[in-house]
Image 1: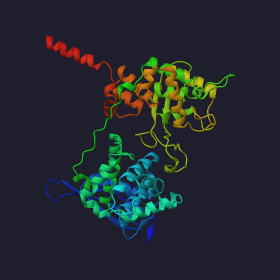
Image 2: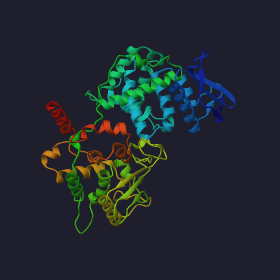
Image 3: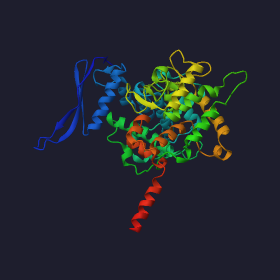
Image 4: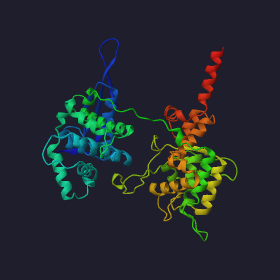
Length: 463
């Protein structure tokens, strides 16, 4: 195979029809590899954009391109794959370099669910748990990141290689139904959540779209399957939302968790200000963990300001490039260099100033750290939060869904702003949402609307 790193791209060229209307009938992607021009034409603009994006990402990641076909090596592997198992592994190699660690985890989770269902009926099938472990821990990682495979996992993977259906078998819609049905179940046979099913189906859909892009399939067979996923619930349950009094009581209770004698501070005291950021500024946990002193404008009086530009979502180390469970990345739903400015009330300003006075900041400027100076793990702050709930809430409230997760503090903040009459675009800007998503997700948390509507109906009936 002759390869080259010398790749050049042109903008997508719309192709007009010959008739007077001049209607666009197709879109051509053009690029060169070592000076040789290549092109690929699509009926739809979105398909052309996806193909060009995949090519550019491969070039950006330093992949060599095959001079004869014009394809990156990862795509060439996918085209040469004869089985679904091999195609999926080539797909992983292609997606991995430019996917976030959370996306890698989600992608592997979905494919480990559907691959065992896309197999022939052959003797020696390993049990479901063994197949899943073999896929998640070994097979569904790029080749250069796979750890040594133990004997029992080797046997399971050999069975998958021999039993896997061919890529062409996916043209038959009946083949996909077992895979779709597999998405609806957890490993223990219980029903999977609607959002989980939706997320996994989206991964399967993208894999099949990739096969269409490479002309391994004439069209996406999922579009021909009459299968309806369960409806997803996107709205926040208003029962999880605390009021301002309850929020303050919970924050006070946090400071008593792990409290020590002789003036020594407990782990709860180190985290109270972090939880306060989630409630008073609607920060996501991963954003609060990343907060640095330079991000904070904390005047002696009046309102302050947080300027956010990074997030540290937690994920298993095997999905990150750094081997760290908290890989630094940009803000959720934002461009890589975007920032979000959040004005903060004097109460939070005071809390943060006191936190800095008591605990200082880390070498990298971070406000919130573990006792050893590391990144605060989700297990650590969740344990503190659960203990605080038992201290601040009644037994009935502890058993309920009220503020069950630290993330519910963010829900409480956004709900409070909306109910306080803050315009939705401003709430969305501060919380890092789109306006349409904000109104859809928090529709049930806007209090007082029922009484207003009832009164209007009553007035109309009287008139």
